[in-house]
Amino acid sequence: MEPVTVNADTYAGYLKQGTDFIDDAALRAALAAPAPGAGRVREILARSLEVSEALPPEDTAALLAVEDPALLAEILEAARAVKKKVYDNRVVTFAPLYAANYCVNNCLYCGFRTGNRRAVRRKLSVEEIKSEAEALAGRIGHKRLIFVTGEHPSTGADYVAEALRTIYSVKVPTRRGFGQIRRVNVNSAPMTVPGLRKLKEAGIGTYQVFQETYDRKLYSRLHPGDTPKADYRWRLYVMHRAFEAGIDDVALGALFGLNPEWKFEVMGLVAHARELETRFGIGPHTISFPRLESADGTSLPQDSLRNASDEDFRKLVAVLRLSVPYAGMIVTAREKPATIRSVIGMCTQRDAGTAIGIGAYSDRYGAQEAERQQFMLGDTRSLDEIIGELADLGHITSFCTSGYRCGRTGDHIMKLLKSGHESRFCKLNAVLTFREWLDDFASDATKAKGEALIEKEIAEIRARSAHFPPETIKMLETYYARIGSGERDLCF
Image (tube, rainbow, N blue to C red):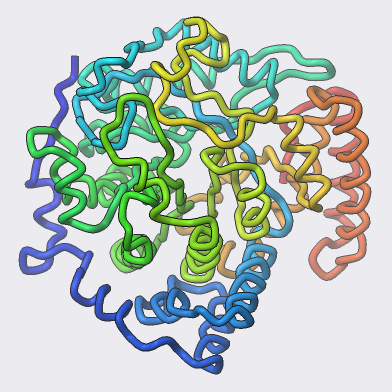
């Protein structure tokens, strides 16, 4: 088994005079500044709508300080406008595939923690991973996954790389065509550069690691000192190592609710995004903002679950959307449906039809759900139900993964996002991949909703001749007809 490696030498070269890029005093000073006037808020919103780099910390802090209901409404509206400008009205869906709950860490809030004696430990074999992928691609209809493991010697880079190759090999028949997973992102423990290179070679999509909290003192209290996760900077600089390894799409996140000062976590995420822009010219591909949920065998008080209210949550999503305008924003099934509906217009991705037990999609291990999952879900509806609801709200579900295979990653995707050009690819590919899913998986009711939405989308594409010239529309029509005949994976 691969050892769990923590090496301070791997981040020492990135420090400036022995300090890292999370300047606690500066961030807290920005948060302590007086609330801004309406004029300054509107000036910040206008700059965010230009979709360039992440906002400076004083601008993010200014938006967080707004309490006036009328100004808050303007912030929410601007956040929705930024999302529409950069990504159009599409929402990408994915599923997490939890492969193992062995973990050497003892994070106080996590059901996987090594001190949880109630946990039923499982690690999927290669064949079991294949069965999970077959269920997701062939029965449910997903095209992209995020592969999740705890931190343990048995689930290091070699295990994850083999899992990626296995998942990509799956191809199963559907009603009209075939199902396969076209994009596998990874949420795993921080790795060394050589380990990350193995994931790159195996075809990783986006590499995701959450800092959990950017508050050093809280981080230290929640992550006991005799575990790998106790090293704040080892985790903080993992994205630097990922870029060094050649992975050019990385994803940030914080677990809201751990810190009563939730605004500090927003500031930390934006500081992290700005650091990556400065060092590598590439910001985070996505940012996630899950909220703490109860989990079997944890030792945090229940009061922690109320550290970020629903109102706080809507505000933090809006401020993150405006502060890092080019990044995808992911809302998770930890949230209840009503909460997701309240923020989905600012978000680009969500998981759907989610099961987080080990082996849960193929239901290999029975019903010990609490004992084999990391936390409790708020939205347990099926993918079909969720897609139907998105259509009702005017959002087209996209299963597009073309950008990654056409080289629209890293610096290339950043330029397209900031210029607004990527939204055109988003719209075209959403129509094509949604057509695939409707033909292969949708219930009659969801198919009817989806087809009505596709008609509307195609009409809008035809009307936007400046963005979609005749040759593009002709190609869309050709691809659309071929998909209707059973072909799959046609894209722009």
